[in-house]
Image (cartoon, rainbow, N blue to C red):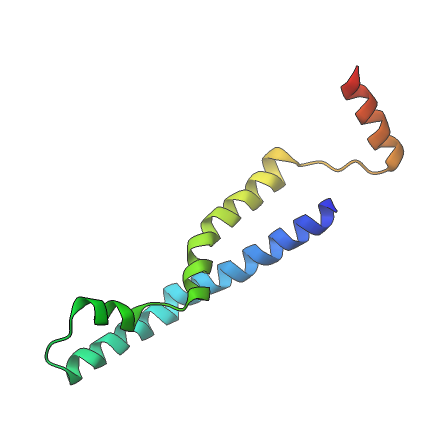
Length: 101
């Protein structure tokens, strides 16, 4: 179970990291260009319309906002909080008994 969580954490970190990088390098520029095109076509657009035109998709917005948190959790869990694994069932029982005494 612990390995499954670690694998899921790494995959989610990689996916959100890729989306974050794509947003910084490509997607944001496309949204700004789209806004510039809209402003060139229309003389006046209100702020709500401008925000709506350059708003990222829900997936990009959530990925960009969650990436720093997930990356921090991955680093914290990998190097500080749980940098060990108990190799066998008998070792888990031994560690469990040691915590009881």
